[in-house]
Picture 1 (cartoon, rainbow, N blue to C red):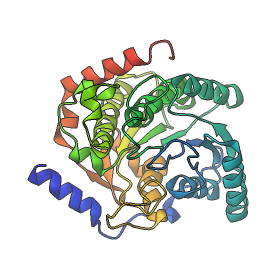
Picture 2 (cartoon, rainbow, N blue to C red):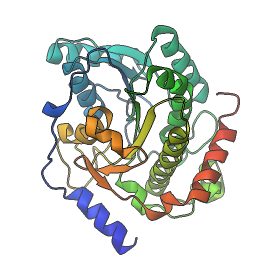
Picture 3 (cartoon, helix red, strand yellow):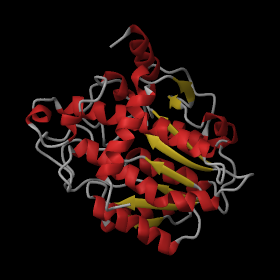
Picture 4 (spheres, rainbow, N blue to C red):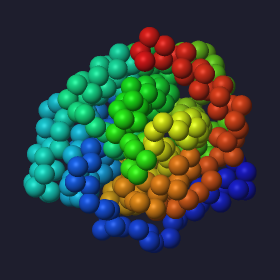
Length: 321
């Protein structure tokens, strides 16, 4: 890790007091949002949904400001539990959207199901992640699980919903894609070794947390590339940002030894990116705690590597788009 990357990591671990708060979220009446769920660190089996951690807090604040919120989850029963809790806390009811990010077929079905029930989408928050599962675990299509969930699953979900995001936007009102990464991107080796993305002996020799860092490095890299493509599309007004929510005391990092901050702080940066009028200027940017502009791993900005990874993912998603 370079001195510059270390400085960015430490700035994210020890951020100054936030200058922006949930009180600054504008009225979201008429706005439609999706918040994807999270997985626990050790398995995708019996994973929690948005009823714990940053996902639930994000849904809560969007509901309090009048937004229509779709809470994605692998489990209907856990989603209903979350929806009931949110109703008690906000007086508003979130909507359930089944989503299994580790299976591309299921991701496509989920997006199609949403499009059949909704005519608009203003905010897509790709909040879900799997962190540190056993290296033996793979996605349904045979990819490294962390790459499959954190990258491929979300990228397919984004691509499936992009036409709706575009049609919802207009010259005066942008729609937003918020792709949650982490400070893990600074710890990844660059460039990406593509042998580590599938079930190879090379990948099996890697530490599972290195595979996590790799997935977040790729998330930031693709976020940059997607933002550039959106900016070049003059027919719509969609923006994309990647961000680090911080070291948060959530289900995802439940055994993490890092200094941890309360869950409401973890939702702050993505709520800023998703709702703040002033965040419009940050298309193609990277944010860190708490709602501050930052620089990710320098190699995430390598344009040739961005294109190479994008092309690899587009081939992987063929047949599902």
